Image (cartoon, rainbow, N blue to C red; front, side, top):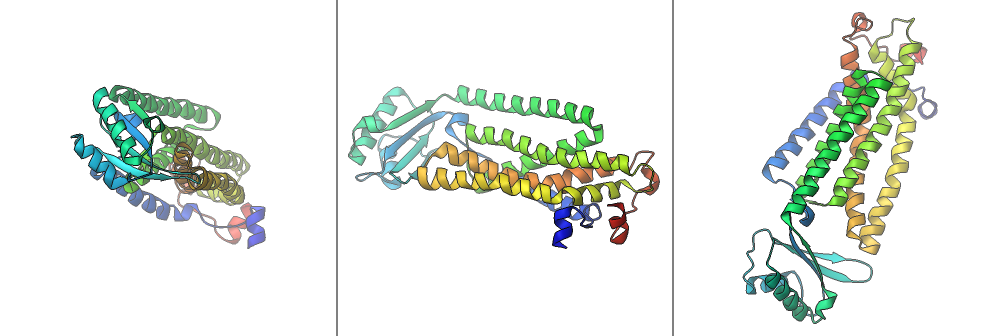
Length: 324
């Protein structure tokens, strides 16, 4: 069994079990969309605009006393986010709030410095206008749309339009589920997250194209046989399964290292934010290449004149082994 798996000679019926994958994905997509409508996304300061302070967690400063400072300066509690950032060298308190006047920002900076018992120069202030945040969002959406168009055209030209549809469905699936996880867990969305999502799509498509290439090769190889397109998918998936698994593992391990190094040791927020999005997306990407992209292509190809007569027929066990 293990030897056959490594040699690409396994006879697992992927296409015959496609409904399981579709149902699982449908449930996850519904949960993700519901979470987006109910809880929304935890947008970072770069997207919603505002002011962020990072103050050394010294003296009397902590999450509670930071709220007391804001209350004393008559800053509304709505939209305020306070969290503790920990690294191997220090601990800091990050306070995010809506747009404030320069006078309020300076007053808060002095108050935080006094509470922490540090010089105000040790406090970092990041001020982003809401219009800049909207610009970042617009450019991110434009980048995604351009990516979709270019990649879809390339796959349709290099392979077939059915495969372009399958790849598109797979990428949309990965993005919706990844965004859903961010919504459910209320993970902050930052520019690093958007960059990671673009990287996720590239990774997901790489894995998908490897499978599509094998499917195209086997479709030509079985031209003189009565094999169904489901057979083409099953033989192709079993042939590249270990390659796909190895690629996923070798890609995810460095991301796990980034998570441990960035968040646990260096305390680098942007590094850990990038790694979290990559980790989530790669897991979904590895899954969707097998259970979304290929089955969607199969459903479309079975409608063609060549494969319509064999629609629903699947070689299993010894019969599939003969095709391999």
